[in-house]
Length: 306
Image 1 (cartoon, rainbow, N blue to C red):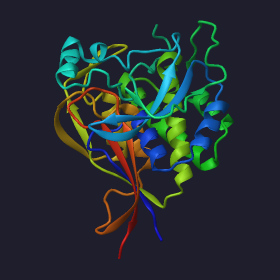
Image 2: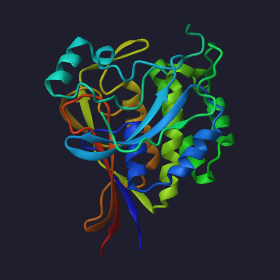
Image 3: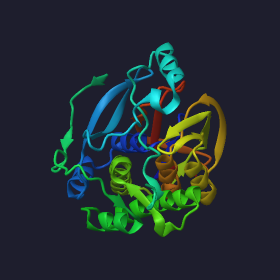
Image 4: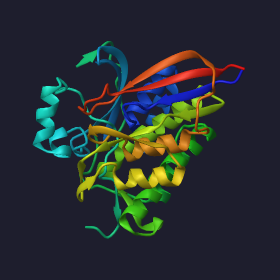
């Protein structure tokens, strides 16, 4: 019987939301952890826990960065200004953490409340760094993926996701693809998210992936180079290249991150759900930004019915 993966993106999609939803659906967590261990990347650990979102018990995938690699992606006041803090308190989301992807990774080379058991995994080199941050180009990312403990299918998915991000960053900054470099501080969490998603999706062994319409938030978001419109330029370029379907939303904030858009673009194999289907399993992944949405990505394993 044909089995499809359906990503229901009513609250948007980001790297950590996708990883959490796939793990909750039944993806191979041990394979994800093996891949994390094999990456020659410093400065992070991963935690897979349970949290409550909108009263629902959902999975949370968290890339924990050390002090040298931390960024502002979990800081609502930085991303959206002081008004975001007030909004978060008003809606009771002051302690929700932020979506997974950030906007600090791509640039020209010449620029200057937790529930349940914690399955946290401390990456072997997470606490050791020289204080000098490296820049990785597309070829360096390819080498990381090639050397990781992943199946060929997972490596192909990871390459596809990073390819979408790199091409979008090149277009956004107006530079050749070869001049796009990812700063280590902004890229570590994206590397972890994308590798985890690629391994998790591959382990499910589905026959196809349906991605729901992606909601467009409104307003602006702060990045390394200044304030940019929502959806972010890289997100829009990925949507254009992959033909992703966008839907207007009145929510003030970034619901679809560049990493989330790249995940949708790389995984999607068909544009619409079958007319009739049964649901075999359900996974729910937590978002971490305090927006006026449930903040949940739902992944459904479905079987089309004749």
